[in-house]
Image (cartoon, rainbow, N blue to C red; front, top):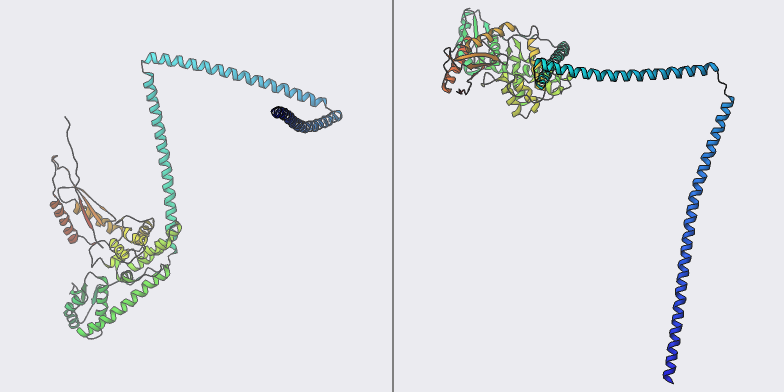
Length: 506
């Protein structure tokens, strides 16, 4: 009985479970159906909104078109057409159509003529090739080469003409710059000439002064000598500053006693006066040009230019003039006027050392400037204004131009072109004297003699020159130049031997 009851209970539980499961499945299906219907309604609603918007926009556009059509209809109803205008429009349209047809006909005829011309050209080319028996490709290459040569010649002529015009324009501009710079320099060029002799009429006083020659030579480096004129005493020496000091001392001795003590006293007085005078002159140039402070050895060398002349042109005046001209030229050419003025003022400070140190004044001045931490551009202006070293920037060219302008100014130098031409001619004559020399010419304004040794003699035999013989040739030329010529500064002698390798292929 108990087992039967348990079996019945199990059956009842299974039935209830199945019924409950079936009820849950029905509920799930109904939920899914409702969600599908809701999604379908949302899609339909969105589609309806979209098409409703488009329909509204189309209706608006249609209404605008209808309004425009109505307006055009009203304008056409009120429009009154003139028969003459209508006829004119029709006539113009007909004329345009006729012209268009004519143009089309001409284009067709031109195209046909071009085709016939091409055919005739091909036939003529073919017959010409057959008659002349030439290679067409070679002929085309030659013709092309000839045309290229003609165009190249035309371009060369045009370039030459353009370069000529450019040179003329540049020359005119440079001449205008130079004229402006020279005209604006209002400083006086007159400077008292330095004398190297003194007139002494009293024979006893003259003998006393000549007796002091050893003292002058030991203290000042100058010697006192007699000349062809008995009343004149000549002062001989290389240092122009000491020469001026000696001349002033002798001039003061004319009115007083002549002895060692007087010489020592006058030497101190004269040297101090000359130092103050030269310093005042340099300071005036520095203030006028506004180049900044110049101190040390540079200032001492600049002061000594006051008592040095080149071709009777005072070097202090020359330096101040070059500084002013260089500043003007630099300003006109948009360079640095400060560097140009400073370099122009100090460009010849090396001339104060040429009687003490061997070498060109440009290189000596540049070495002093660099040793005292001068601006490299200013030092380059000093060292490169005669081409002794490569320039740094464009300012050295300005200084070289200013130096040439100041030296070439009318009245600046007494011994001008004639003396220079004579010096160049004599230098080249001395350089061509040895039989082993092929040619000789001067460069750097007569400051260097370049000698080219011959490769072959008159019989065609090779000329051999050893390095020792080259040094001997240069030394002989140096001695002859020093003995025969008179020149300012130094002259470099350069002997050049060319090395050429020649072989014969058989």
